[in-house]
Each structure stands twice: as structure tokens, then as C-alpha cells.
Image (cartoon, rainbow, N blue to C red):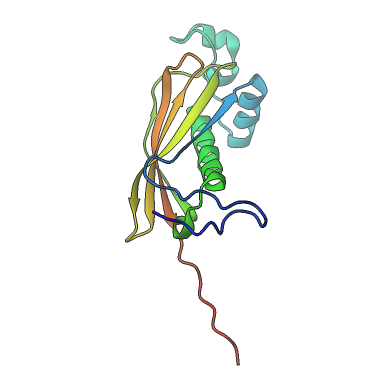
Length: 161
């Protein structure tokens, strides 16, 4: 799969074309503030995320980070991927995430590294699929999903007149 290099900012060297196996990583240490802000934005005020005393009585023994926060980090990895690779006609929009799994709990203070790797490219319909794996600072897998992206055709303009 070759690209045009056109997605690089003016004056920069062309971005490498993406292909099966192209990959990026992002990392984030999740703070208590992240959890409270996310809870406020989404309205998910579950006690297992916000109430330390309550959480001591749960199977995990402490507060857990919202699983859907990790989906948001997967989206950030997708955006970073688009900044690092020339996606050519595959540049478009997210079609969503399949097979989302919250494999292990993530706790406040954990550092999660998400690896976003292209595993399938379909030139016929401009769809690409990426495996997204999240691992904590101990290397344990805590999140897994498949991200589906759909390229958008470049609009063609008619000359007026």
C-alpha cells in the first residue's frame, strides 16, 4: 500500500505509507483527576470508580478506572496513528470498535500503553482494521479491541461557468 505523502504538513518530509503491521504506541498514567473528570463528563458516577471506602469491599479492593475511558485512549491512539502515517484514500472516519474487552482492571495510578496495529486493509471498500491492545506497567493485557476505519472518497468539484 503506497501513499502520496500529501498528509504531511507543508515543508515536512512525507509520512510513511501505512500497511499491514504499521503500528504506534501511546501511554498514559491515569490519575484520580482523570477518573473524576471522566465520570463528570459521562455521568457514570459508579461507586466502584469514585468511592474508595465502598470499593474496599469489592472483589478488586479499590477503585477501578472506567473501561470506556480505555476506549477513549484507543481513539487517541487512532488519531496519533493518522498523524504518523500517510493513509491516503483511507483517511476518513472511525466506524467503531468491535470485540471490546476489558481483560483486567485498571487502577488509579496505573500506566496504560496502547498499541495500535493495522491487521487488515481492504482497498475495495477503503476499510482498515487495527488491533488495539492495552497493557499496564507490568505488561499485563488489560484492554483489547478491533478498531474499524472507513476512508472517505475525496469530493470532486465541478468548475463553474
